[in-house]
Image (cartoon, rainbow, N blue to C red; front, side, top):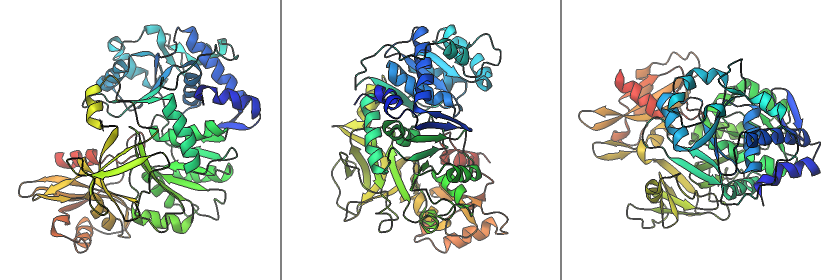
Length: 506
């Protein structure tokens, strides 16, 4: 299958089917294909060609979807970057990717203006989707309006050509650009369509950032099958629930913080959302307490995906959830998984070790970093850096990230074990446990919590309640701190390290 033929195919055979819905605007496959053709031809008119890198630094917008499809048609590789990047981080990643052009938005022009002289991109290849009269940037809308809506010249895209580069680090550490080929995105399209029971008639809603790799878990199936893709500018729990109902949405991908926020609304249930067939939790573990509440509200619809952008996943299917609610499932067909010790030896069921895996979406490597690639992929197996075990049926249970492990008095303490207890308190809406420096023990567990409204419970009361219930002394919390909100990444993940660093600074 050639991924660059998908939209053109649907424009012929499913021409009048709704392809995209965004902020009240609706586009059929035929209409959206014409928009993508104009962008593809506009990019070619700027001198971009197969293999060139196009960076986008954008909020969710129609233009992001157009870029992804135009890139497929032309063989141009997309480099999606977080709109939270600033200064050195922006410069480092754009230059590291050998970027030939940049598409961004007017609210970020002050950030770009401060560093443009350090970015290795021709001055006439900075493009704004909302020009706002700035003469130093090209106007996306003018460029596309002047371009032909005919199919761009055919490009024989190879399956091993780069489709996109996803960066896993920003302003700190070495850049790690995860390469995804057209073959990998094809595997996303076919594999996750099957895993999530997506059909051509499905309606898929996405509210998370489109520059987050998790977006492709449903984006690729949608454009593979010609389903309807409903995009929100940003996540809002109330608006999302209303939109699911209004658009008869069948499939939703969400990170835990979004699921938790929706569970705080009484209308997030089977009676109000009868068409909903799937909500898949992705990006971080969802606490068991929240999973069980979800299953009570929307039975038979919960899926969970554990995975790495570098290219390995397990999926907990809706039908396996009742028997294995604490698990993150099993590798899909064509994937393999092992649990190994520090020497790479396989461990038996029930023993905790590092999760390693391989499959059709495993990256060929980090962009221009064979050294980092060699650390991550050994003998064809991707080393996750995550700790877990399998039960006697082969289902995977996550323990924690190696980097989040707390070592207290020489003992390994897993934050998730403590979090699963904290979240059971009726006053707690969400929790993040981390290790804080301790002169005696090296590190001691601290819990940051977000409360359910005005509860009257004190931080000390919460700490004591938890410490009465943990199974070991070294799991006892030193302190509980109440936060109004948790810091989140652009993908909606809780930034546990940021919470820890801010706590340490106080």
